[in-house]
Image (cartoon, rainbow, N blue to C red; front, side, top):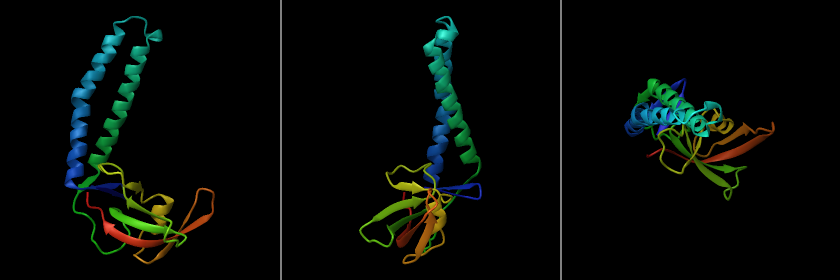
Length: 165
């Protein structure tokens, strides 16, 4: 489970360990494999028309981007406990809302970051319009947030509980 605030990413120990293992794999064996593919493709001749070479270079770019992302997350990570079960919407909480107060039009989501989450639970960033709109609210409260088209939407907070990854 992760939650992001003020350039700090809060991670459970399990999420931290998972991301650290991914970084070690990408920085070691995966990186070596890409380098070998590039060298192999380079041996095939003219690089301008060598699709294998260009594909391997593209894969290398994606790998290096992911390594940078993981380094950034882990450098700003704080490993800790789940948030308090106090009924207040905050990063790390699973929130159930009803749109326009309609109990038949509900959704449940994690307020936080997708990194380190291995479930199908929908995730909204605390910086998203919905995330900002519901932050600090309690079960039973109403909240409004701005839609991309400039209109406002309202939701009712039905349930708030800590994420149990």
